[in-house]
Image (cartoon, rainbow, N blue to C red; front, side, top):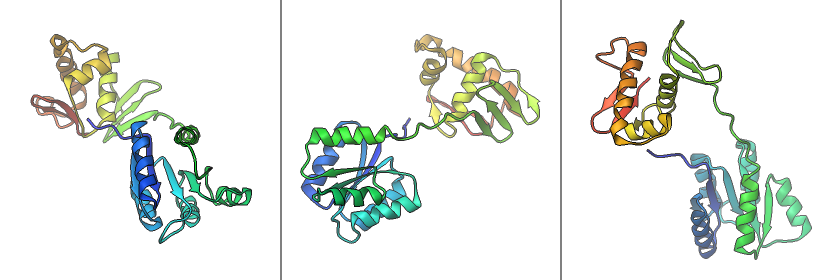
Length: 229
């Protein structure tokens, strides 16, 4: 099961050696990095990738870094670090006023660079966990732990509620019995995997039109279960 990266970065730098070195070291720190060598490609990449952070050099072909920074600020909420060989106070003010969250003057040390990246990413607002899950006529209130099918309140046990919530959060994805066993019950012994099957059967009697021919919780042979909504 793939997990979307919460530390994704687009790096826009025309110096190939520097670009490759920074990308490599960012990836070693656990970041997902996509890189571009000019401003226009960088703009397209940011628009398509929706990263958490953009690191952009000022002196770029096709579209300079300051213009790119201003365009991104008008279009989206994204953290931006400017890299530049210009290190005067005026240059830094212009960069920050263009919408950058930080300004790193070249040359810089790798340790300082990575520390600046971490510091800027800490400014990223933490997403509030959703209070509700909905799929068709099914709805779960995760705070009140209420479950409904249309206007009807479902009588779910504690584990049934948690199991349904996990399936709904990962709608369309196949979740193995071992994954569900560990996630919901907190243990992974293979001989207890039958516990998952039993609870799935109970859930189906409460959310399926025809539990014998389920259309919401689908069994994937030798793999696990997939929630279809």
